[in-house]
Length: 399
Length: 195
Image (tube, rainbow over all chains, first blue to last red; front, side, top):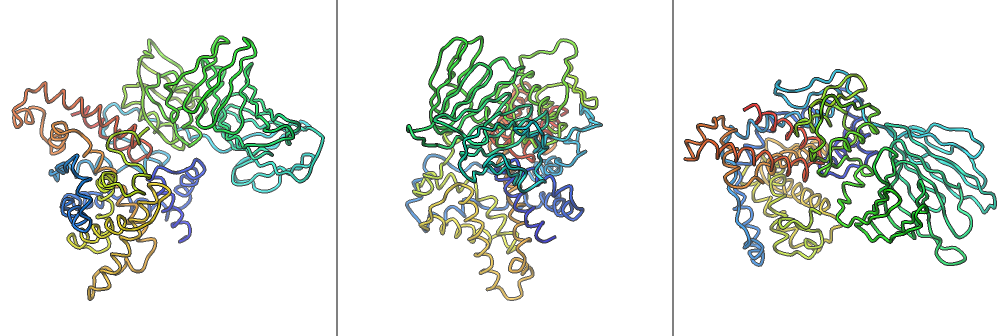
């Protein structure tokens, strides 16, 4: 119990520090649902009366006096203050109490059936809330047999040639035991509401988003490392050296190839998205379209958009938003409604239908953990004038 | 992206103890540190002193931090030690639990961080906008606010709309990572709309 409380504290803390990994947010969710004691701890932590007291306390604090004492001990710090002055603090105790009352739901909104806002007006009730996707995937071995993977199973799954295939901490890992000349291919695939991480035999890490797949040799042969993907994947390619110098890593995706030497990048190639988008975070990559035989070289922060066999390089791309999924978030940065809904369809395994004339001009914003239930994500969108109702696994968007 | 905004500081700047960065960091972190100290020592003035000492220790240390979270963790650690020392000096302190329970201490840390989040979000609103928000929260109607500030009703309404937009931006976008912020903003916006 003590152990788990401590872990829970740690997770809550990391949660606040905004550095929970996706595995950790699932773990936090798990803890909260695990025992009554954990929930009590959490309830105490987020008790409204306590927060009221704290906010009032904070308003009694003389922040200038604290800072002045720091400056007194280190006079050169005075220079840091020159550009701005302290803002007057909130003086209305009533304001404080109200904010706290409104904010009192916070963490607990992570619970299964928690409505987020307290005003009765315009809140759409969600009867059958939809839980977020999970760490789950299907592994297809060289002989065509399949294994269902989840984060609970740990240990060696199987041997493929001279490679050990392990499942540990929700990762599929390929470990080399010796040299081999036989090329064996595996395929890792996710359905809607699933995601997985694999570490290939060369140390390259691949995060697979929902409804995606990657086809790869269990051990890379020759001078080139090549894999094929569908859907969306984030790569951290390990540098590798072969007999003839560096061994490039090539990702084939629906008539396009991305060639890299050691780098971090994301490819989004869902068939229901308008284009294949390749976003580079680190290193250098070459994007090649076989249909038009054109290619472009990307530097970090750039995105190659392949549409109608043409590659266009987009230099003003919000990289954080593009790869947010890999870090466990939705990040909508002035996204249109349909783009947002396609993401929800994939992660919550729901269908979205549009009723009447729905405007697609909205620019939606928000950074929302993917570990939240569907209703919580929808609540955030509702504050931005998105109207909807939910029927079991269907979201109906209203004008 | 956020690092480029003018009121942001980077870990490199802090590691070099740049005065401006240090000051900005102080403004961002002092609420949770002083609250945390107060939760352990139950004495406002003492908590303020301990808080000052913690920032002085940080400034004067040679410590190089890997990230901003490590800075915060350092502040919590020195503050906790400062509180322990202070409590030891007080005879029959009514709340010696700070010396005993790791869980208790961690819980106070988390609690302090949560309150800081709420506090800073409202603080970020610009002058008149924040003033109007404070009045809304103290229960005043649009008409009363207009009268008090000698503004037209439409000006108050415009400021309110502007405040909502800004809150959306600061809370949903910048601080939007956490569920708490999302929830607070959702509730806040709902409330304002019905007001």
